[in-house]
Length: 191
Image (cartoon, rainbow, N blue to C red):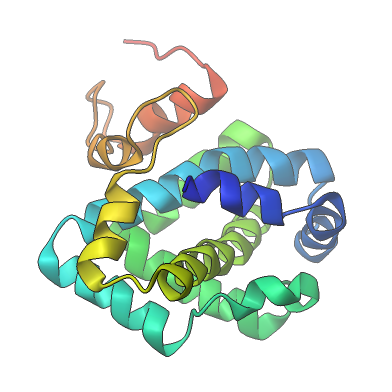
């Protein structure tokens, strides 16, 4: 199952409007942030799940808190508790690259950093819920969860795990995310 398509499928227009209202962004900006943020989140999760310990940590989070029930009613997606949870997920998934990711996605989408952070924090629990649903319905082990994540493909056919690993700066400008985000928005890199 394509995790990114499952997440996108759960974010209908009504849900995107609620995300726009809660973040102060336009619905188009929400879509732009999701387009860049979803592959970064899933790719970073895949990178984390590529080790036994990383897969076990993700599996543990799924077992304790992210069983997929969030998908039954997304009306609470934009409440403070869910956004706080999403902020923590982003911290675990993106690590020290979190602030850089928010800044770069904000620049490319024309969305303020605060709105971008809110949108990404809203998106992260949906990703975990979809993964938790897959774990529950497929009775997946930690190793299976790792395989699901590492098998995900991006819109251009590039494995999202490879995308996350390629966070490392390609053009030597000191930023690891401008290269990755440029792939999704088609911008050319100078130098």
